Amino acid sequence: MLCPPGGNPRTPRHLISAADLTRDDAVLILDTAEEMARVADRPIKKLPTLRGRTVVNLFFEDSTRTRISFEAAAKRLSADVINFSAKGSSVSKGESLKDTALTLEAMGADAVVIRHGASGAPYRLATSGWIDSAVVNAGDGTHEHPTQALLDAFTMRRRLVGADAGLGRDLEGRRITIVGDILHSRVARSNVHLLATLGAHVTLVAPPTLVPVGVDRWPCEVSYSLDAVLPKSDAVMMLRVQRERMNAAYFPTEREYSRRYGLDGERMAKMPGHAIVMHPGPMVRGMEITAQVADSDRCTAVEQVANGVSTRMAVLYLLLGGSETALPSAAARTEENNA
Ligand code: NCD
Image (cartoon, rainbow, N blue to C red; front, side):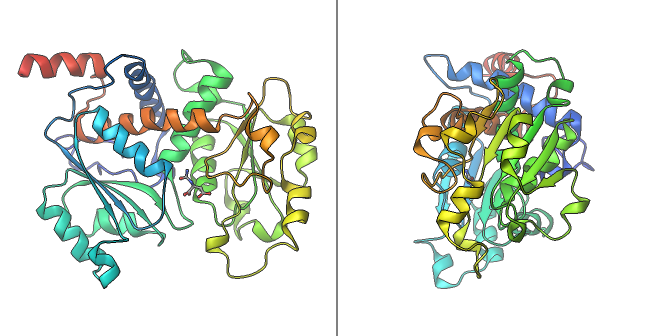
């Protein structure tokens, strides 16, 4: 999956799905992200690695964190960044994905980071032959959001194992609980795949109406009782109810949902002392999470955003510029020698 242009031509150079990542791929990204995080601690947070490369952020759906995170990541690697959002572009005049892609290709994009409401749009872009650039899925419909799963794994590794975790086996046996609107959540799908690849045990907790058909084939367990699962969790990931993707009533009232599936201080107290609360954002305080929990030390939501930049730097670096051995310090030296 992750192979820079000029690498093995038979290996695709895209990141479409967390399910495509081998354990080695995932560990390479997480270890590279750890190196990238060190750059964020420097007074000048920039590496010259992608100088002269162009990254296009192609966003057909609303986004706060993911778009600015990819933008910050590309800029910290010295790439040129073009932000393209469907609102205010010719897409709102009816332009197709194909014509939009051809425009980007004409502008010389080296990577296209795409968020789209249709599941499969990034795959279509990557396999259509319309463009020659690397494609990174930044969330497609209810399908996948692989960089979110990677930044979540990075956060769990740091909080539950430590930054200098040994290679590979670090999330092995950890118990991760994902709670809420699983049916519409690309974050849940990507996390289930990646966490299973990394050897963690995943339990999904949701009202029966928000559990997808076919979940029995996913590498995880399903429970309908949050209270029963909390004491056995190392991390509890709360999900937003994705109203924008709902065309029916999936639960009686918001109050009833919060009562059964929301995380408040009392419930959080049932978690083991070391366990963390995660949320990909945006949080709806009072619905799936109370303000008390969101603002507590155990909640990693803000940390996840910071870790997102390091993780996306790692992904862009590995797709566009890096080789397996060239971690940032070595890459920076090579750039200097070539300058
Ligand atoms: C998520 C998304 O867009 O899939 N957010 C994110 O990328 N941080 C989850 C959500 O919108 O609830």
